Amino acid sequence: MYRFVLFAVAALPLFGQAKQSPQELLKEAVTLQQEGKLAEAIHDYTIFLDMYPDAAQVRSNLGAALIGTGQYQQAIQQYKLALKTKPDNAVRTNLALAYYKSAEYVNASKELTAIHAVDPQNGKATMLLADCDLRQGENKKAIELLQPLRQANSTDLGVAYLLGMALLRDGQTTEGQVVIDQILKNGDSAEVHLLMGTAKFSAKEFAPAVADFAKAVELNDNLPDAWSYYGQALFATGDLAASRKAFLKALEHDPNDFQANLHIGAMYRLDQDYEHALPYFQRAEAVRPDDTAIQYQIALVRIAEGKIPEARSSLESIVKASPSFVEAHVSLATVYYREKRKQDGDRERLIVQQLNAEKQAQQPGAKQTDAEKIAK
Image (cartoon, rainbow, N blue to C red; front, top):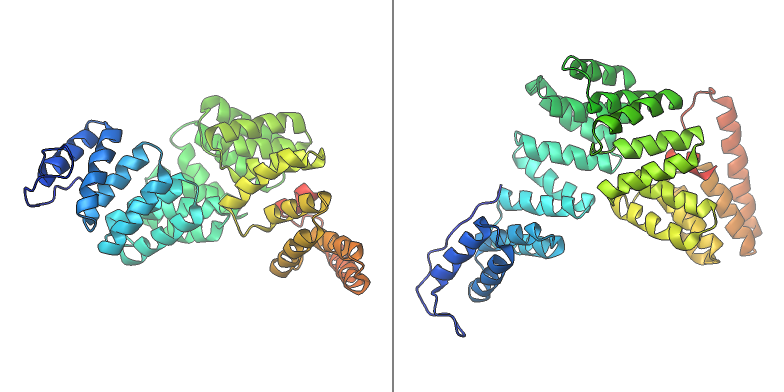
């Protein structure tokens, strides 16, 4: 994915003790990078860019070297500077990857959306954008991206798997089953058990889902999302001890796993261990900054800490974004009463009564949000 380019520059001596020309220095930097000597390559690229700051492709090379050493934020800055000098889809893709690897999925999505707009046939960018959507809970967006890919690549199991996950997470179990059946034709696998477990989990068949997730992690300990879903299913069956272990395992593989951070934080909060709860919530919030489930959990921590104005502000934003979020209205009423704002508290209590009446009128199988499940 990365391109190594040597610039045509005048053979002028460099500053300091080095006797290399800029051209020789750049050639050395590229060679070092190709040999995996990234620290040395970074050093050479930095010296070169001090002299030629508008060399966009060299900045891109530097960004790649920084990525290789885990310096994602520094790489992001280099890619952004390169794009300012010369807009280029390859550099934009590298920037998106840097955002993705640093779990900045919102920013990664913005860059990938720009790529998809001008190059909708770019399958790799489309797949990565769909994956970002899934990680942000935007299942329908992922489905819209993946369905054309599946039509064009009906035998691509990677596309089928990602689409199956999106359909199942969106509650489209019938359509998801069609995809599962396609993958099943290739034999038993961890991916198949993860998909089947997800289908059962979506149907609230939690005990059978636990069995499938357990099989998935047995077959592939490193399968993305498997430990996280295993933890969620165990949580739903009430086995909190096993659930915590599964979520911690999920975080070993991906420290930014949204559900694992959300649920472990919630378990700490229920134990009134707010000091340990908050860092998990904050990591989850970084992944999905607009998610009301995590915003609600943080608001509950703020209430427990006595930070009432901060909690109130957050809860007011939550009920504005999710007017049917009963527990948020309950907590907001509590906050208003603590602030001696009886009229506002009474208004929230009335909203709660109305929402509860509406829920009772619904069919018993109505789905709950993650926030509602965790809040109880």
